[in-house]
Length: 158
Image 1 (spheres, rainbow, N blue to C red):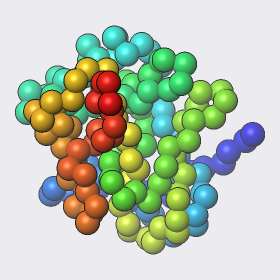
Image 2 (cartoon, rainbow, N blue to C red):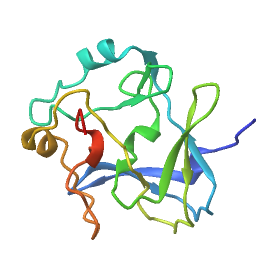
Image 3 (tube, rainbow, N blue to C red):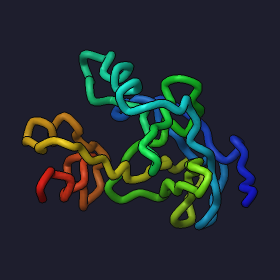
């Protein structure tokens, strides 16, 4: 399947509350393929060694896990898809294709200038303590915000 996308669909700007954000440069219809999530393919271990360089926000990461157990590390060779923030009520979704490529698609019509977001669906292979949950805090501000980017059922043994 050939997916066509252009960067003319989105732009990047600074936000006083969320750092850099991706936004729509034009109206996007539901189902539109916006951008591929690009970066260096590597192992979780190698990418984790690079992550956490920011002492003020050690859980900030640009790592996207794929089904074969590898990750796409957008901190190395990444593109503008890395600036699409998490939301508990997103307007996009990340779809992994059979070739392990990941594309961001609109889940509804998105107006010009609207921030692009998707649910990161983060999970951890360790006990999710209140401190961990807070460390992966969500600041989306939606009415149904769960307060964390971690999935509610991601706690080991849950």
